Amino acid sequence: MAHDMTPSDPSASGVIVQLEARARDYDRMARALAWLAERWREHPSLDEAAESVGLSPFHFQRVFTRWAGVSPKAFVASIAHAEARTLLEDGASVLDAALETGLSGPSRLHDLFIAQEAVTPGEARRRGEGLTLRWGFAPTPFGNGLFVVAPRGLAGLGFAEPGGETAAFADMRGRFPAADWVRDDDVAQAMATRAFTDGGGPLPLVLIGSPFHIQVWKALLRIPTGATATYGDVARWAGKPRAYQATGAAVGANPVSLLIPCHRVIARDGRLTGYHWGLGRKVAMLGLEAVAAAG
Image 1 (cartoon, rainbow, N blue to C red):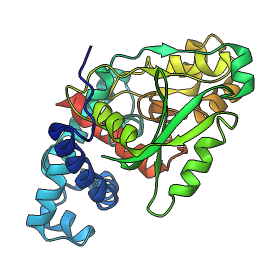
Image 2: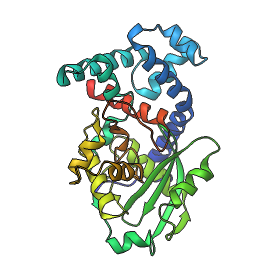
Image 3: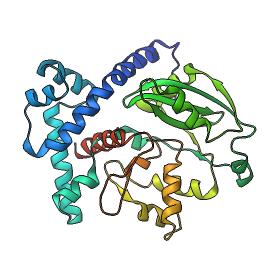
């Protein structure tokens, strides 16, 4: 069993500091990613990219490389490579390939071992009754993360914009209103360490929902890092090939964002449709995944 790092461990404290730095950088880097996504075909210079987010070229290069793990130039090259590969595989146009590939997401999460533990239909109807859920906020590469932890694993992962923590918690609590909620930021930070660092160990997920929702969430796990799927694909994998609307609702109700990759679901025509935690965040997740898959 992997060693659980908590904030009291020196190694965990260092990781939290690193995650806090990446969380602070997220808003500016998300804008940089969006800017590069619109202009990558033009091969923008470092000076132009830095100016788009109000940084000097030197500072932008340093912050971007720290956040994304690659330089801005390598990032743009990886986008082009990933989209060209998709084009060759699918026979799509370059534009369609770009829409299908997206812009960002951490590849190491694809390799996490997922121990899924569903509940009975009766428990799902009671919406968390009898469960104690510990929750708190912790920094992540995609901003401030809201972690919800059940006795047997992670039950929820969402994100909060600056100043939006109360609304994010109310949104998450509304999914399991009958549960007992206990604030515990230490538990949240320990879970963030496991989820967003190499060597964090297996991360068990506890899926609390109706049987159909759980089928859909399991189907989402079939989408590989760096790839996307349509709602129709997910509906077929869930055993309900004609239930497009119900599948879309189940995807939107996914309580464990990123780790259950609902961000990899796109419209049939290749559009990046809405994302519960913000379309910009979806673009960021897909982009990083595309870079990792290409590299």
